[in-house]
Length: 294
Image 1 (spheres, rainbow, N blue to C red):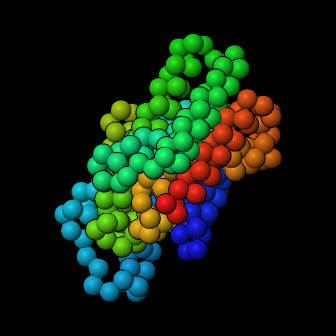
Image 2: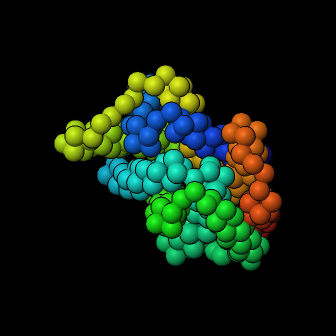
């Protein structure tokens, strides 16, 4: 029951997260939005430190925890940049629909590196997710306003983000095997702060123009950051209670919720092919849910 609550909360938060990102990108560049998201994440460090001291007595960091959390932070950050670049140049449902294939990558990584078993219903569910992703990808060909080169760049960014998030799940599972999810979250926050410093230095030395004074961008990015934080904590809690191949695949069903959010709040036009593709993703996720009892 508790596991299902954490999974449901993750799916809801991640479904809403993409919508807020898209709204933020309407008023600022992908670079500026990413910088704002990192700045908004800084308060997590003192908040998590206080909560850890109050709820997890004698908690401590080890080299192994820092290693896996650091690798997760790096891969997640690189995937996030590629994702925001693609989101700024394509519809939210298109980008998030394709990146939803990252559970397929995680499923086989979990078998190879975590010793988890491949379950038939989970594999079938993964195959349906892959088929749904293919349908979603083909629906993107209706975007005639972009050149072939631009569409290729967007697609490469989506593929990069998809692979990064798949590998990221492996690192997260290794981390929560060693420590409480709150400790992992806190360690990730420290690495994310380090990433912010590196990002700021790169922007400064390259003399890139930065504009982070848009009130609307900050508002939407704040909601996005909140959804990311709550969703990620629930996701880590779920990882601590179940196998990585189950948690990562089932939480990968958030695109259906996101798709309806996109129709309602972003006023995207209904696309039959994209809807069918996302629906296949969710049916596959349903099979994965049933596999949890096996």
